[in-house]
Image (cartoon, rainbow, N blue to C red):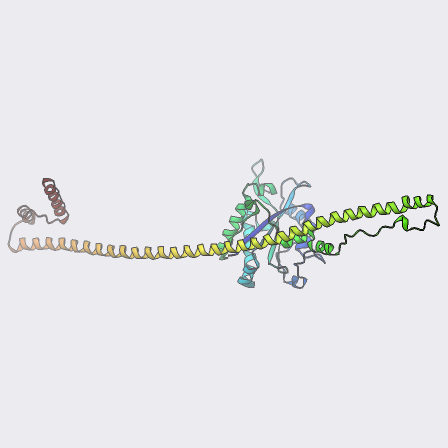
Length: 396
């Protein structure tokens, strides 16, 4: 099953210009090879900024009278990158993909009671390998000043003040998205894994791996030929001049060439280590992908077992509910029979007394119970018989 993915990054003012140009596709060229410019027209905004992010920030701060001290080192904006995996979006289709990002947008507006007005930009990128949304917002907390007045305060540290802030974010996002009918698993934040995973493609881009490989292939480690003083026709030159040529021209060049050769050799070793590191990383990436696939398969098996036992439990519950219902019906029927019997006996006694002019009904009942040692009240009779049985058992 696919994961509900949401990642948060904090930005200072100096970062906003570059983020704006990337998110809003204002650059002519991009270092990211995954961007397909022919598909950029498919990108769309759930909320568009009127100006650059830094200028938009200033206007929003003034418009909403945001409190809080802003320093050069202060984080003044946050960015959620919201996505899942490529297969998930291919399976749910275009319309559901739009609903996915719209639902995520609503989640951000509601999470921590932020408010939709503090979302600066929400841009969905469809021109890369996997659809994803860049959502820029101001980390505003709703609090009170010293006088007890309600204020909105720009405070990134307070917005993320809990130690498990990102775990809570992952929990809330997963619950919100699944409650809106998206079949997803909970994403795992880097704070829980205690490591930051970088995809191999991203690592190659960071380390400029392709160019490194090219340099390795083209690099020559042979030491170039160095002129030897003995090759010079000394018959035409004086000894003093030979020494001067050797000292001033040939030796410095010789030393320089040897120094460059050593540097080149060292660079080659470093590049080889880098290339080997990437190759090892690719190997572990494949192993990691296999482990994740196996883990997903195990989750499916566990889900199937849970479903199987749930079905058995439901069947048992239905079976016993049926038996209980049947017993309740039988019990109600017996109560009706007993009640009807009491009613019939009373009518019969009343009829006998009137028919044969036998006096009061109470006297007839009392004489019957005394002479036969039998109560007309069934419950009393059962209690009497039980006591007699207990007495007989004790005597035995």
